[in-house]
Amino acid sequence: MTFKEVYNLTIKYYPSEIDISDGKMVEKGGGKFKKLSESWNDAELKTEKESDFIKLMVWGIFCGYHKKAIDNFMNGKKTVSLNELDMGYLKYKFEESLLDTEDVYYAELRTEYKTE
Image (cartoon, rainbow, N blue to C red; front, side, top):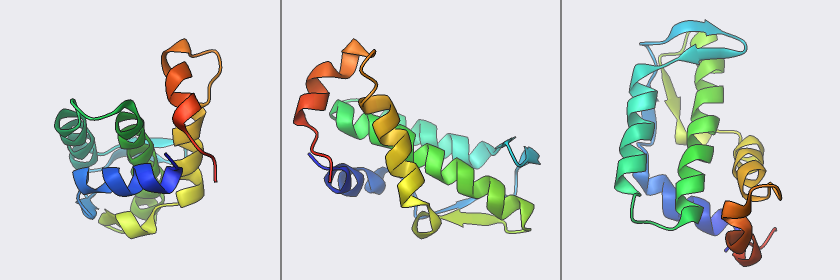
């Protein structure tokens, strides 16, 4: 499995655009977005029976959405879209979890992952 393959299998579990007008305590380092968190929870529920690759990508996509939501909110935007996400950051968050060699849980999964 490659990053692109896992990403393409996982994006269907998220909406292409999320309303972030409900942002609270938004600053450069963080913020809370109720609808974004609900989208993440929904994606986790829908992928309970999917592979660990997809479950990890659900987390990675949430991280990408959250990072962009902070930027958009601070710039007065009310939504964040899938096509705005920083794919480099998303890949970093996905691989950060997957390739953590101290995490024995993903040891077998790492052998199936092909870096691009």
